[in-house]
Length: 91
Ligand SMILES: [Zn+2]
Image: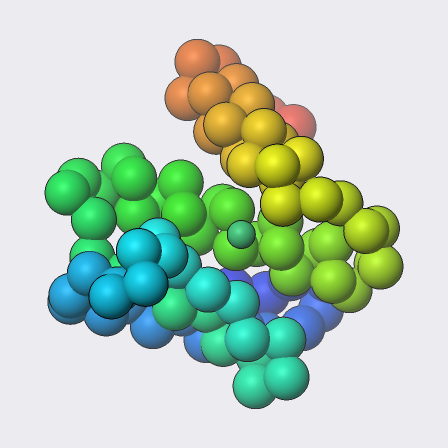
């Protein structure tokens, strides 16, 4: 799978094992790759992908969000998307 983030194409690698360091995912800005480690459920994996996308935006625009802020945005955006049907925003 690939995701286009601000016109930059990132390849998304789903790894079928949990990361030893306990990370849920990681973004490699240099190689334009996002790694998503195995989670207990698919929803958590999707949420981690959103997290890494925000990490890439933060990097690309040099927003300088702290990691805790990225985590809160991840929770807030994911929750809002799930509770609302916002497809028409993109039509
Ligand atoms: Zn992170």
